[in-house]
Length: 230
Ligand SMILES: C[S@@+](CC[C@H](N)C(=O)[O-])C[C@H]1O[C@@H](n2cnc3c(N)ncnc32)[C@H](O)[C@@H]1O
Image 1 (tube, protein in one colour):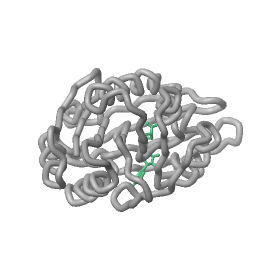
Image 2: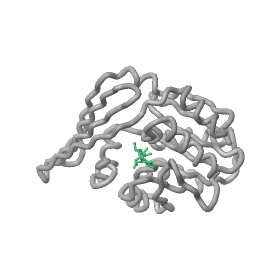
Image 3: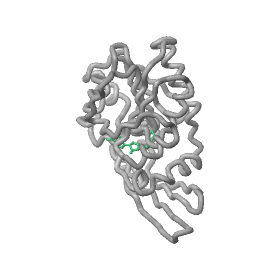
């Protein structure tokens, strides 16, 4: 996970190059919150928060926001950028001193669970750390669409460098390679990530099994959202 560790500093440049719109996605989370929880003030934890892109936009909405990530290097950037509380944690096993009203798990972070057992551990940890009626919201690239990619290569320009991102699908695994080229220091790093493609019904069944009810599946653009209530 070099892109989340020694290369964490280039993560925001990479995201900017991809055109990901954190503000629009925070609007959607706010819409869901108002529909399901109402207008009251709430606490939100973003697990796999990375450098705090969603957290910053959610803070602007007036929510009490917390960032959680397994990589300290990502949290250091999030802390600097958002001034929010940042918790180094593994999504599969965490316990907070106070329960949350919403836990979000955005941008394919859920795919870092390697199998259904780990997916359920993450679901259970989130369930245990939510207030009754609280929401667990997951964003994942539409699993049906990823499944059908055999290979894809995309190239992104970053400051004084390039990132070449290669996806290889060996269903149910999605292997990513990030080739990070630094022109200035004449350096090149290859970073391999192994993700799991969970079909929609596997995510719904796993989260039902750990106790969530009223699981809604929402397709929006390239993403599928799971809105799960405790
Ligand atoms: C694709 S990035 C998404 C980051 C952020 N949500 C965003 O939208 O920019 C995945 C993030 O998940 C984190 N991560 C991976 N495994 C994790 C785990 N077991 N527990 C918590 N965070 C994890 C990585 O460190 C990384 O920041």
